[in-house]
Image 1 (cartoon, rainbow, N blue to C red):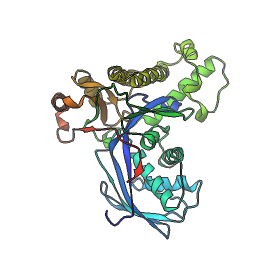
Image 2: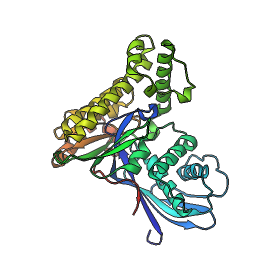
Image 3: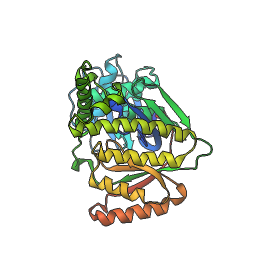
Image 4: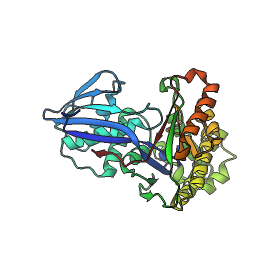
Length: 380
């Protein structure tokens, strides 16, 4: 990598509280941590992009000056997506030549958002475009929504770009206002455990976009029952409907839609409580709320494979774990936990032995990693 001119590190992210609500303009929290994506690159004068990956097969080549191609269904789509989103606002004349490498297995840490963020920053740098942090977030998010086709909110990109070491990001995805809240000096030390179930993404079909539609349908139901004027589906969000309206209408609508709304309103409350717990250094309460968030993900949002639910149940019984939940959309393969660093080895042992007793077929692919919080995406 020595001969490349620039090096970007774009971290993965975890969201301890505020699950499945960013696409409904809810409140969320997040950490960036010290594992992620490295991109080494040199600008090219002729607009060509050539990329190699140390994680995936094959090489990618395209031209930034030409219109965006259709998706090819391989890892190069993320670079093409970054080009697509930047081209909506800027003229691109230079490309990049480089190598990208990801650390850790990729399920549930928003590796796609980390990769997109790195490409957006690299192509902007090559073309002398100065982007604010919020512009990097929005460009990467637009690439993921419009080019990759995942109807996400801005949570993942915000954690990756705005994260700071030993600090919690608190973001209102409706107003886009955020605070970076330093760890209270009274708070005990913690690390982030990332527990990969061993279930690979190819085995799990994701209901992510379906859940988004169900949340919007719940909102439409509430508006219709109370005579509120309906907005078009894409402009309908649970955040715009008061909890009182939900209390009036929850018995009338089909239960599955009521459960999605129940998750949204209860998570809103948990994030508010959790931010206060974090500010006062109460890691026990913060962790407990994270466990409760996961319980609501299982019961009301109905995500999580039996493998992830098993890990969650083991974590709850585990000494030294403050709290935790499924990571990412909860349809893939990871759980996260906030842990006491002094008890890492016994935590590793207990979770590994109990989980593999239940699911011996994952003996080869099950992994636990311990990570620390870190600063957001940056030039190294």
